[in-house]
Structure formats: structure tokens, C-alpha cells
Image (tube, rainbow, N blue to C red):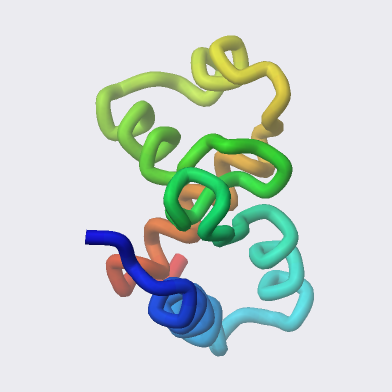
Length: 97
């Protein structure tokens, strides 16, 4: 079932609001790195400027892939992008960094 743009944007806004404990700079950094757009990857959170969903990077890390291995497979992303994915996932599951 396809999620509506409103529910996706609200979910994203909720996740961003969960980093209220963080500095303004961290919030801005986070929003620069991760984006949600219904026209890209079905509205899944992706690394900004790519069609790479956050869950792909998280899945690779959980499977034991190193940052260097991910960067080799996806040379157009940066280590900061990978860190943003990790931070996004922590916020999504309710952890503080």
C-alpha cells in the first residue's frame, strides 16, 4: 500500500523533531543529508542527491560491511552520508547518540 505524501512528510518531521536534544547545527546537517521525496524510491528516506535509501546503507552495515566497502560500492556518497544514515536510524528506533 502506498503511503500518502502527508503521512511520509509527517513521519519525517517527527523524526527530525526527535533530535530536539541536539544542536541547531546538527539538525541542519541531518536535514541536508537525508531527504524524503515521494518521487524518489517510493518516498523512503534517501541520501540527498541520490536514490540510495537509508535502509540499504543500514542493511550493509548490519551485515558487517565496512564504511570503506560501502564507499567503494557507492563512490558518489561520503562518509558523512553514511554517518547521517546511522544517525537517522538511531533516531528512528529511539536511541540518542
